[in-house]
Image 1 (cartoon, rainbow, N blue to C red):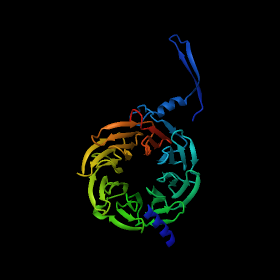
Image 2: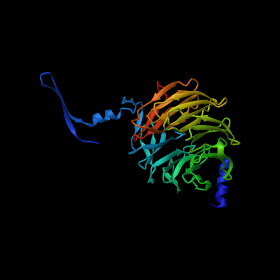
Image 3: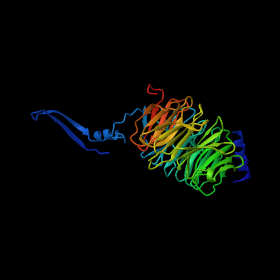
Image 4: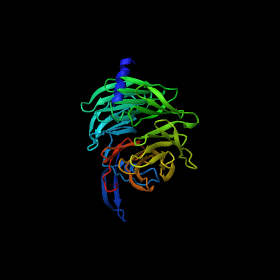
Length: 405
């Protein structure tokens, strides 16, 4: 990369089915035909079976306002346009990504060109661009208004993708440990160099000038985006003992929280990288466990952790005490705090999204409809819509303004 490329991006950061038919006949006590129903598709029975949940075969109530079913395999990723709050982008195992309308399910355009599972999708902060990335490391960016392809790049296998929260800069973490950073649409780039293991997750800090990256060896680094150098590293005994799976930052007090396969979460000072607390998120007797999701409340001094053993823990970040442990029927995949109140959403492997009150640890709402595990979700910026994606090959749109909410 040329010095000119570096200068450009530094300036930017600073600115910051079966067809069989059967006949069903009903007889009275004397064996006389009472009624007959012709042309009944035997798929009707299987459809009912499909609506049975993983928990004891109970029938699932489909609470979705709309079901997007254009994908032909598991759907991995979803993001909602922060500007219109009526566009979503989804990517799936069918090597497809679509931009579509929440209100109607209409496909606005297909993000073509992928030849592997599309695992990462996202709109830029202003909704001008939409980016998709697949497992092979192919990144494609489109201009939403014109449906024009404006950028494409291929690197090593992708782990995660993030947009900068205030500028048209896109980040991609890779299996080989590099974090790529591009200015869109020019393509000016910079690489945050690997130290030899996978860059498993990353998040831009509140100042917009630094990034926190978690790695497969349990270490965490704070990078200066202007210089592309490491400011601080959490390593050795202070680091996680295994892969860092999840990260979040608190814009109010510059704290970072990390979750790991070692079943702990760490609270870290975003200025010095000093580890302030280590939360034990383990569950006695759990055969398999890890901290899959973490997040800070934007309104209260709370943090949340979600584990594959199905436990949501609510932590007081001032006292470092666990306020509540909220058990789920299945493993937690992701979580997200409400922007206006101390409520936290969790999505689970049982196909449900739940809403918990962090003050008292009580379950306040549940949204169901999926026939298989939920793999991700997003909430519209206006707080009106919840969109989930699932192994069942669908995305579902739920209203958050309904009486159940």
